[in-house]
Amino acid sequence: MYDLDSRKDIMRLFSDYHQRLTGSYGSERAILAELLEEETITGWHATRVLSADDIAEMGLKAFSREEAFDQFRYLSGVVGLNLGQTETVLQKANHYFAEHPRRTGCVCFYLLKSMAGQYSKYSATLGGETFAWSLEDVAGAEAVEALKSLGVSIRVKFAFSFDRIQPYAHDSILSSFIDVLSGNMSTDYCLPKIDGAIVGSIPPHDILRIETIS
Image (cartoon, rainbow, N blue to C red; front, side, top):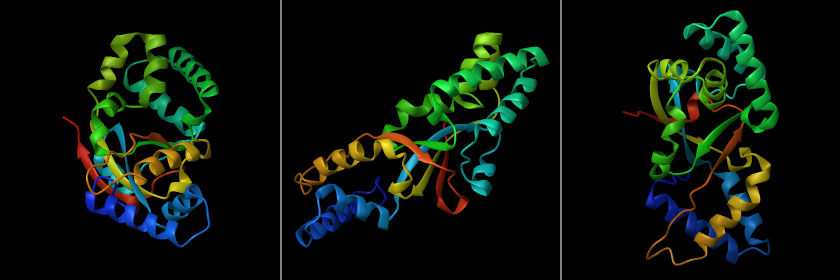
């Protein structure tokens, strides 16, 4: 595993990459992709949950649209919506999902712990952004504020294989890494501040750390 928050592991990635590059006729992109598929890398996910123990036991779930709707129905009841309002929330959420199909069936991630500040907003409410937007459209900001009083905000560090990132992002991520790995890593480096989405769930054995966000 390459722990991308660890200078030691980043230097090992640099060394492994250049060793492969020296002894291969493949392209830089193909060599790096192969390397990142042989060993897992680390990433982070910010969320709000009723119990952090659920993540430790079950991992990070990539909800299908139907599973997301089940959760939205439950949370709508928690904040006091009636059946009519709940159905309107689901219609709004379905519209958001139709516009942004990558919001289902995947786990969003950011690459480095140093990026945590800009992603803390994703741990603000139970149910995530799509539910918060839909709920606010139907029941107003007060209902969204009620969500913020429930559960606990956490960030989760986990391991994953590069080839699980949604394919559309592969080329840009590889190019960003190659730019860094082609420089002088012995003096200074700055890994690319990458985010994206991983296809499927993150199983419990790949969860490395769970931190509470105060």
